[in-house]
Image 1 (cartoon, rainbow, N blue to C red):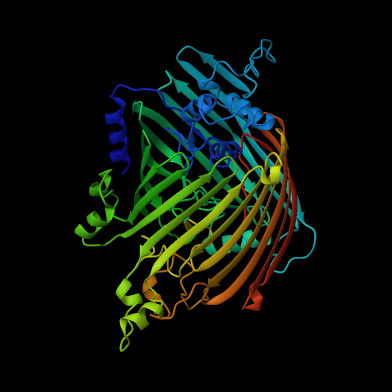
Image 2 (image 1 turned 90 degrees about the vertical axis):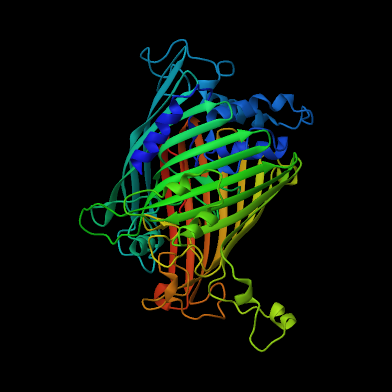
Length: 572
């Protein structure tokens, strides 16, 4: 696949190019600033917040145009809104020369020439920045926790660097290299025991007294054959949706190699992703890991200034060390190709929408269909059609996931007090397939929701930003999930083949070993310098299971220092 994708990239690079930037990291707080602004400004041409990460050039173009919007009043943007906009300009110096004051007397004559970057240079046709990427998290559990196997003291250290650059406003490059070592609270340790890898990581080695040592690297190049067409090739993550979770594609798991094509014209944004992923593997000796492949497209349409709809389709497949060329067609209905090939692959289709109630509220939703057979669900032997319609049989193969959420910004008239309520669910056996390879997973982790399938979840989030440099965030999560034991498959783990289902009919969400999890966190973040953060985090989590041995309770407090690294929540 690498040869095919590289050849594809070279063909496009020979075309006349125009402006294109690198991307704002998915976990950056800048994403929240932009999503807030979209609710206030309404949906505008050229910017679609459901497709993350966001292109830096598109972001600058979007905020440049805010003042010209006809229905924006002078008091719609508060002081903190304008300070956040100034922050975005400062963070995207490649595409802005007007809004950030440059230091005429940099430290040691070369440090902090630009206030956002330790080392930077900007000359005609070229810009580059280099920053350390450092994280130190220190903390621990302050009471004995059932299920704790290791020390109460917990730490996580990340060391590396970040570099990004722009050539002629048409070619961008980005790389971040991190070496990460640490240990985790009990519930994350339990996740690692099951998935055989830390969340968001892939290959790892043992490190000191039960810790973990792994690399977190990402890097890509971007080019644009035309004003409306952008291309990214590299190793990173993606997210589709407007919620806290995504039922389509999220950034929960490990990074992967992909080619992304993005077409943005008029009211439309059409995104294609072709990716090489890693199948499930039992941890063991070093070896070449088996590959699998994914093709995906998502169409986002701004129907009006306040209504957006989207269509998602994807297919997961495996071939013997090669990509299925028929899936490279960027405008085909994948299910038709999959059937023509003999129906060996795992295909999905989904629909999403969002509605802005101007200035303060956004309602959003996703529906993913893995498989649905109407006759199996609504055809009871010996009963009438009317009876069958009102008495579904709950066939195991009817697999789908759904999301519904609402955002309320500047709640109750309080500037930058933002509330969000979100509900998510996935039927048993959703995302799974007849073999482990073609499940909707990568490197032993889900590609969509971190709970996999067979669950219902409610999330309530509070965010408050009293001043530009300080913000507070809290999430309350309640999840009801059905788990398996060693010999059963109730549909909660997408890595298990669905042919081992427990019963054909009568399947309900949460079936199996029932567990209820309550999670709450409180995070206070202060940013003394641009892209340097101090976080104080408290996490309480309690899991109650039908199997008493799985009960678990967590009280965890830590203090962290971050430089150029987005905050990662372990909220599952």
